[in-house]
Image 1: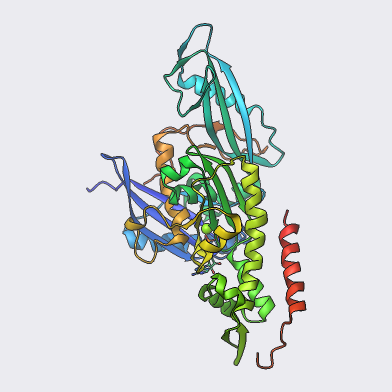
Image 2: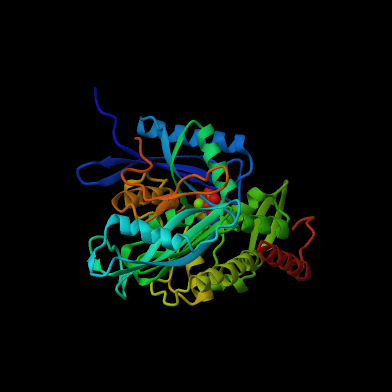
Length: 440
Ligand SMILES: Nc1ncnc2c1ncn2[C@@H]1O[C@H](COP(=O)(O)OP(=O)(O)OP(=O)(O)O)[C@@H](O)[C@H]1O
Ligand SMILES: [Mg+2]
């Protein structure tokens, strides 16, 4: 009988679509080859959060079945990427003595120092730490040590980055995936998965911010010296732009979505009085390109100049030579890179998955970055279990314990239309601004 191949499966719980990325492990080279991607429209998930368990379960099952039929293999275990509202990043430090005379650092010392740094965190009730990420070790005052194991010294210090999420969010994700008949073998915050999915090592080392612009959320991850310094989820995405267009221009959501995908944010368009015609309810409506671009720009200005900029400040990373890497479905908006570059005065590039060449055509664009990133996350954890530590699932009391999981994780394998004047437009813009502010 032929052995079942060693599979790595990533399940990306998106607000717009559920994606399932399947990779096959080459046990000799230790490399993973993506062999298929399945997807299904996402129901029951809003702003990245599960709001209807039944619908979300059915969407997961449909995406998994799509992947199974593509690869011709059964899927029973998955590593899940999800967004959580109220995600916080906390930085703490720990220090331990290795004894009076210098000696080599052991695995027990690494466990001990991580525990020491974790003991500094006061985790609020009903929350748990999802990821514990050692940012940097210092041995006898020498900072910037990547991996202290087997190095010699007398005093070991660590700086930890801990990602705290509401326990109920994790529990709902696990329940939903279990109901879909799958075992959860790992969990990863989506901003971490998307950054691993699209960044080069050079960018991560230089200092860079990845902005994953999805349907209902925007994931922000700030990297420097190869390590994530801050991971966060902003509950605003492309669907908000679509809603803004639908409300301001009074057109159906489907037309607004199509308009958004066909307009360019080039600076010339801001002064552009050229008309765009939209068919709506049997009528032909006409808008100026400027009008459409202004609505989109209003939401983007708020998102980048206020919310993303705030995350950059909070990260404490001042040098960003790698600039901004945009990914996710909304990054396909024409002219967005130049627009964001002018807004934040940083170099900007739009990036899809690093592994795009190995993904099926049509399923290898920016929307699939986080899905592909789950596979990279699984591999990174396997190669270095101390790099991204996941907590065990929260116990009933909400407490969680940590372990660096050794071995394979996530494996098992116009006309008649009331014209919207400048005044009305301004009011709507104010409301958009207010709604964004009210979120925080
Ligand atoms: N060419 C395009 N131009 C502008 N927006 C686009 C384009 N293509 C897709 N989008 C938008 O991208 C969004 C979906 O992106 P994506 O698939 O990355 O989201 P998701 O991962 O399902 O959601 P989330 O990460 O927020 O949970 C939708 O708002 C969609 O309208
Ligand atoms: Mg997404």
